Image 1: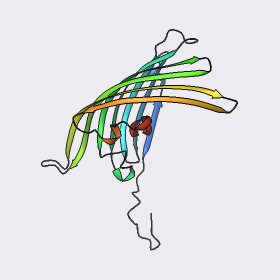
Image 2 (image 1 turned 120 degrees about the horizontal axis):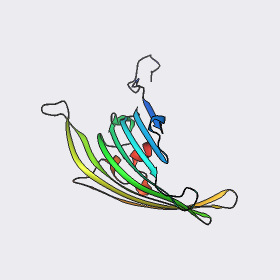
Image 3 (image 1 turned 30 degrees about the vertical axis):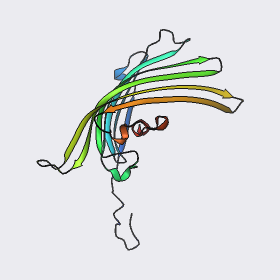
Length: 193
């Protein structure tokens, strides 16, 4: 931003960013399969991700709709001035995850559930290095989450939803804030994409 005297006050970084998502590219077509490719450099974060999800049930017209999937994601914070310090640390992750999710209508209720297991390596920028410009601390971590949701309409305009969410994160020391579990599954990394 520019002050009235015409000088830059230091708050304007002059940066541009991008967020590119390719979903189900024709070259990767497969029946009952969805693919997503992402690349981004925006709001103090950069990264790339690739995921695939396949419908695994035999019947598409009745019974539960069940899907299994996998994802590989690299995400790094590039400028923590843009980020909420309660949710983001300076550092990055390379993570792989697999999930199984299912949805079924039971009378007026739509019941859904999802189990996810993942793990990866995180690295933190800890400051100046001895032989390099920056020193990084790295550690492995694992994550498991489970969620169940029940939804139904109430009247002509209303709705009711119940949700149960839980999980576990395991690592040698406290993981980066963006890979910790937050109340109701409001983790920063999944909320970002």
